[in-house]
Length: 228
Image (tube, rainbow, N blue to C red; front, side, top):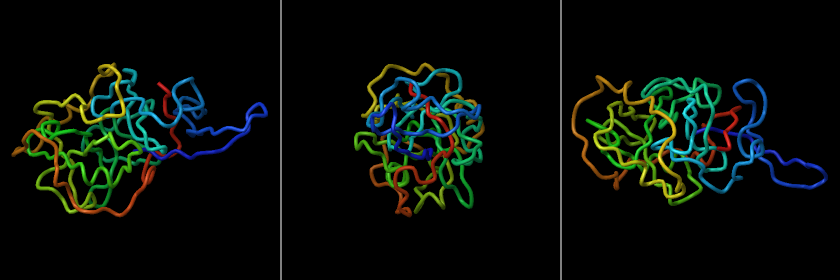
């Protein structure tokens, strides 16, 4: 999840709402909603579980400050379960997001079902919803955590195993595009992950409560989303 500041600007004498996505990888502004002709805030531009909708250049689908999913251009070098910083980087790769883990932050895999999480993993949709604060209630994504379910993300460990039977992002109701144009960077990094249970089906019971995060809390600061 990435934090992006919003600004109101006057353009050509017309007052409008413009989302300033912050400097991109090269230091310039552009990409996201105001930069490249893509849909404005109010719609998911990609599927975070599959990375569908994003180019295959290392861009990653993640939640932006408006509460919708958008593509963020590279660099997104951190693999699943690696340490990350959602404000200044390093940022998580495709199909992943940076969230609290123990005393720091780690890259969690987005998921729809336990099968997205592989051996020993559980798809925690409750903690994910509390942390992300998605704007579209149809986006019922979770985070893969190592079972059993934690009381909250601050005590959680991300599930690092490769998916057993991927759901293909069926729980992301706000995005109706085609299959992913990118290549997952997460499965190879999951080799040697913890073994154990993990069954099909999403987590209905979910983890415990989290401090209220709200849209954009703990997200990626200073990054430009790609308008697709």
